Image (tube, rainbow, N blue to C red):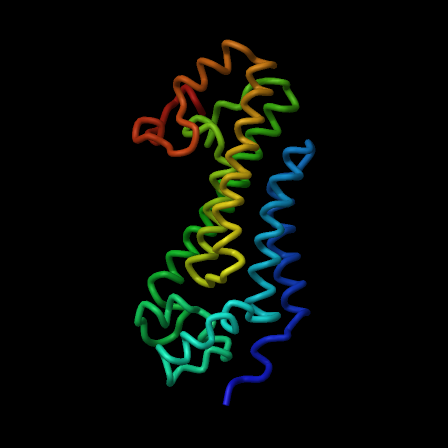
Length: 218
């Protein structure tokens, strides 16, 4: 018999969604329309995630026929078995201690750290109407969006759902488009200075060279 209280916990849906959205809000301190769109896209992902994690397991119901046939002895309406990767990949024991869950926690924590660090540099530059080129911005041009993508990917490693798996690539495209729009604005404002920055700094994936300490950028 499955645990009847595993889902329908809407208070936890609201509480967990609010906590992570507040964390993102406090780290990014959105000011522009682009800032708010970036935070809004992330917030939609978080709400969809926790709705299935604690509210209604839509993905499990949708896949129930296949799951029951493939894993006849597993009660997927038990909250522990909602960690689908844990079962599908054949891990045993507590799902919170399997390699994917541990990796997901590391990715999420690093993502929030990057988000906080990057936006601190960005807003300082905005206040001085200068170009952000230090900290994470010395390593890649869009660390704030990389951070959001990392956090969402980390959540997918521990609790995949159909809606979030569909939303993830869509939101990646949204962030890429927001980044391109920001670059057009930066080119209009900083001109050749930003073109030089674009030439010397990768857009999304830091190179080995830019990961090395650089006294001139600190």
